[in-house]
Amino acid sequence: MNEINIAKVDINLLRSLKALLIEKHAGRAAKRLNVTQSAMSHTLSRLRVVFDDPLFIRTSKGLEPTPRALLLTDRLSLILNEINVLLEPQVFQPEKLSFRFKIQTHDFILSSYLTRAFSAINKIAPNVVFDIKSITSQSYELLDQGDSDIIIAAGLQAKTKFIQTSMLEEDIVCLFDSQHPILNAWNIENLFKYPHIKLSLLDDKDDPIAQYGIKHKLPERTIGAYTDSLHNQSILLKGTNFIAFLPRALAEQACLQYGLTIKPCPFNVPNITIRGIWHERNHNQPAHQWLRTMLLKNIETNTCL
Image: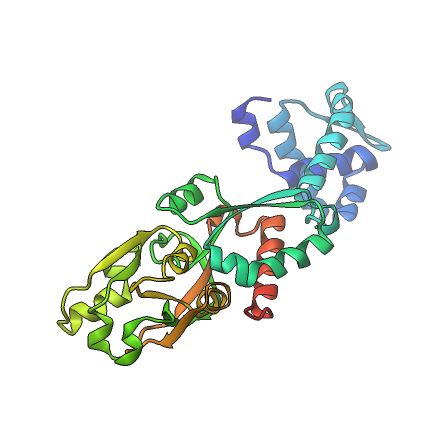
C-alpha cells in the first residue's frame, strides 16, 4: 500500500474489515462493533474504494470474501494486534528499570541533598546508574541537545522552553576564616572592603552581591578569586581575608571541615531556589518522570548535614 492509500485509511476502517471477515454478515459485524447496519454498509463501501476490490460478494448466506479479502485476513490481524500493543498504556515497573540518568548539579547540592535521594531510588530500582557532572557554562546546551537528563540548580540561565519545578530553598550566608579582622567590625561597609570570592558562572546581573553594591553605590568590590565550584570557595578561605557568599548547607559543612566562621549576611539577599530543570521531550517519558518524582520526594524530606 503506498502513501496515498495509507492517507485514506483509519484504524476504524481496518477494525470494521476484520469484523466483516469474522462474521461474514453486515448485520452481525455492525452488532459486534456496536454500530448501525447502515453505518457498516457505508464503511464497506469505503473499504472497497481503499482496496480497489469488492472484498465481499453477497450470497443467500451472507457475505462471501473475495480472494483479495482472504489474503488480507492474516495480515490484518497482525497489524491490528501491533497497533493495540503500540497504543496500550505503558506499565511502568521501576524495579526492572535499566537507565543511565544524567544529572548536572552543584557539589553542595549533591553532598547535602542528593545522596539520600540516590539511595532511595536504588533500593527500588537497583539498575539505575547516576551519571553526575558539575554545572558548567555548557550545561543548558547539553540539556537542549539531549546529552543531559536534568539540571538541579538555581536555573538563572535556563531557557524558557525548559520545564522547571522548585525543589528547595537555601539562604545565603557569609563564610570566612575564624581569625578574619571583619569580626571586629561586622557591617556592610567593611564587608565590601575585603576581597570576595566569586562564582565564575555568574554574571554581575545574576549576582545579588554585585547588584546590591551597584544599587547602593558602594565602592567597587575587590574579587580575590574566581572559582567554577562553590565547594572550592570554602577551601580557599582558611588563612586569608577572602569572604565567600554561600548557601547555608555548604557553609555549615565547611565550618565543620575547615574551622571557618559563618555570619548572616548584613543586608537582605534573596534565598536561592534550587530547581529541577528538564527538556519537554522527556516530560512524559515514564522512567524520567518516575526518577524526577523520586528526587523531589526525597530532597524535600532530607535535612542538611
